[in-house]
Image 1 (tube, rainbow, N blue to C red):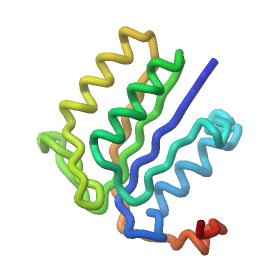
Image 2 (image 1 turned 45 degrees about the vertical axis):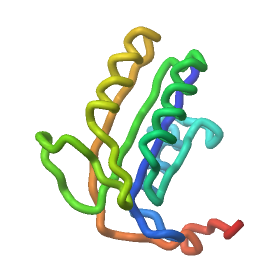
Image 3 (image 1 turned 30 degrees about the horizontal axis):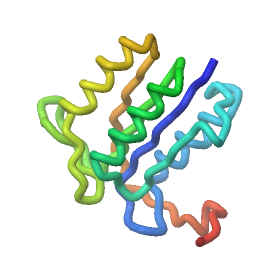
Length: 131
């Protein structure tokens, strides 16, 4: 079974939202499904819509059995909003819905989660090295 997770946040450079870091840490535990680090893609500082589409397209064509797309914005948003904003990058919900529909054609279990968090953690606090 091939499983992937895409975690998209909206923190400033060199930071991550605490909930985004917590989601990552959960996914690698037994309770979270023991997802390999190599199958988790994290965009902590926003992601352009075209880049997200490219990653989703490649992941679905990689015979993916299960995919989690997790969005963590800076502020709460309502279900009737047409877009999600991550560090100035607009992600249209219609694009997300297109890939949810496409996943059905590939028989991929595709889950989308929306969250928000203002609490930031520096990447150095998390033990990440600057490259």
